[in-house]
Image (tube, rainbow, N blue to C red; front, side, top):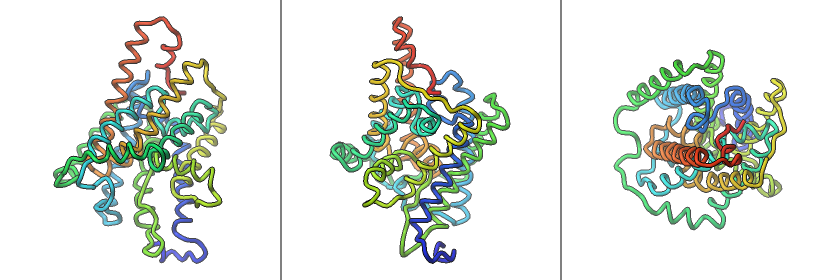
Length: 353
């Protein structure tokens, strides 16, 4: 469709950067205001309200994405989530490691990216580590481990969830909406989370239909953090040789959007580490998230908020593994805190913000 839009002096990949920047700006503002984070929904003190926010966003993302598929705007037939050979070992291992990491750092990748724009120096350091390890897993010294784990696959006749997509969409979306309405959140917060969820189908349609160009193709993608964060790090140190892409625009927009929201609503606050032990725990968590996010094929947003709407077994296995890893790690930290008087251990259970 891109060739029909009338652009003459700019290419589809270049427009994609600005498109992602816009998505990121809106995501940053909405995520900062709603406290959007799956980790909070699993082990946070306000987990019921946080889960309601996450689920209403998922319901809108799912309904909007499947509506776009039904109307013929996009198709996931050739997407990596629908590959028949399921890399089960990588999904389970990577998801569990990512879930453990997000609990150790008190925030999933999306939340920490948002917090990076609000003055949280802990989040900035974790995301740098996250990006470095993710890039090393994709293209560096950890790539052999990635290739090895991806070699253990489970053949499937179809990587899509069995049955009619409409039924899956209705059951998941309806259940998510019912829970969200009973989660104790106000209408304004749920509306903000709904708008956030709408960014997912907008991303899919934008890259897979509006900006589609046979002669200068762009990657078919939507909201995600693992590969985009790695791309942003690489662009930051080699921008004269590497052009910006969707991921760079997205991450830049999210940080800028959260900064704008924090300044407007006066929630900007410089925060840093309190103890060396806390620093070490965050570095470990960022490392686990970087490696785990690549192995799982995405984070809580890439594999969850954007992945589940594809109705693929791959995305479902990844997000369930992330949830399991987060819950198990949360239980272990709680047990450790209850059996020790050390204040640094208790600190691990406090929310990132």
